[in-house]
Length: 257
Image (tube, rainbow, N blue to C red; front, side, top):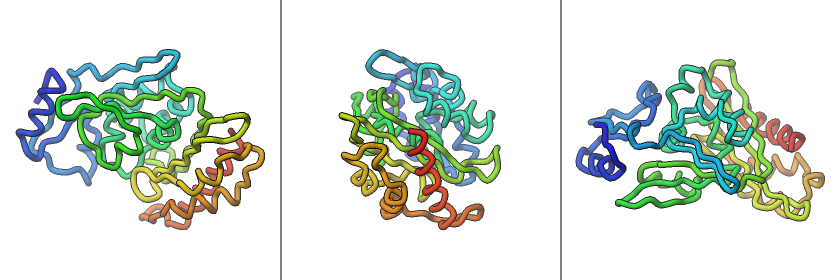
């Protein structure tokens, strides 16, 4: 199906049980992909642009990960993360919206978007609505139209570990915060691959609040982060090794920021 409007796409989804929205289609090649009764192609809906202004950056849902990697309109931390995701072939197919709405176990860009306190613009029940990314991910309702970054002055950085250069990352960690009077506020510590698509450490954020960057104790930060970020091992990386990766990432991100 190739709807020409968001309204048409939503009506098809409601009518055809077991159907799925199609952005780039990279999830269809994943062995864990669900069986679909039908596919609703979103490519004709004009969701493939990156719009940048003084106050915000709006990234359309069907922008590919490779287009994001090459864009000069988005923050460097985001284009950097996009450019390291697996292979060029996958990046040319995978979309930004699919990275959020799909159920893939790892994402290079979601931790960065979370660290920027990004909003999701989505279409549901005939209307466009918005919600913080971390909130929207819990329910994943509606059609993702765009991801919107409004806090362009936040301090954000990201790093990752891979078993092989062309493989999916084992762990991706991003750290973001505002500086108010030289002190940390609204910190976000986001990890992908620890236990699924995205994990957020509330305890680490609470520890960082009100500290100057130079006052942060890396050991304390790592300890707080691992209190509420569970790690699950797989055939490539054990849970213990993932914990060590997260600790190493947080130390490196602190030094960089």
